[in-house]
Length: 124
Image (cartoon, rainbow, N blue to C red; front, side):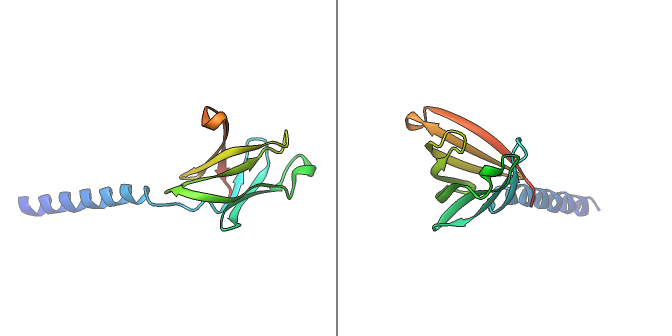
């Protein structure tokens, strides 16, 4: 019976290892995300890449505004593109990364030396 327990332990370890490895696979950014300010942002296919559009906001004038369109995939769960800051109307180099149920948007200036991050939670 000792051999039986060893086989079960090896199989259990293999299952846990493959489950952990599964979380490293590419995730889609597509869906609806909640910002800390209460706004809902839709991530979708836009211009051959990743798009981000405000679909609900406490600031009515921002609803329907596109933050990013055509973000290019640079790695699993990462995209790069131009981001429009709806507060100041300026465009920045932007980076999007997805990890589990979180999306982080980084807007950078000076070649990426200064970046501001905003992390959102997946709604659906």
